[in-house]
Image (cartoon, rainbow, N blue to C red; front, side, top):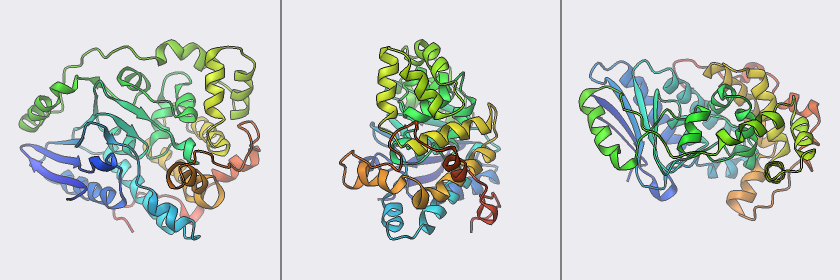
Length: 345
């Protein structure tokens, strides 16, 4: 069975991820297939809307399938990972900039690479099972696939908080943070999809989602995550005796210090209204270097390969990352910089 189903149905170009047994994790070939479909449909007058969904109740897409990245990277071959990220990011940009209406239905886990497919649609639908997150700092990366653009645009300091902690968002929180647009109970999704296919219009009546948690946490998040650096954030949390401060510090101490420090710096460099190409180019500076100079391979070993959940990061603590190392990870790449030419190479 194919990992993805691409077809034209009614007035809609349809993209359905069909790896429910793997939580619809995104492979390199799936990225290329989505990109090719978008290229074709942009020029096809029969396609009036693009509808993106996935099979299975547990996940829209749990992230990227990174086993091959680990296998090649541990042999000192970084070319496959760099090619994967480069072509994935170009697909992310094409989806965000697509000239026709796009709509996605995001059930269950939508994380990492899934955000790059599901959260760049023009209309993003979530239901009661939604669990959206950017957990890359836990595996030695930074939020990517255009995620830094969404995080940088989030209200207050939600971007820094969500990017560093990888906190999961239900429907209300995802809408608040800018990762989703409307809530629709999942029992109504098939009927909604049928209307979109028939009419060619990405239109849905929004309903009120169950209450989230981020709104009530905003004062604490905005206060503690307002620092210029990760070290500032950590020191602010350490100075307060509260459940929020203790729980957040515990989370930060599990994640890669270098990744979190670079996440904070990247969001501050991007400002509050970056375009997706600027965000992706910034992300690629980090991911291009991630296997050789950061914690990515160790993060994957601990989380995916050995599953011991005990990574040995390059830095002992979140406030122990020298500024010079953050700058080095985000330096321009010169001839290796991400570009967005029409044809992938």
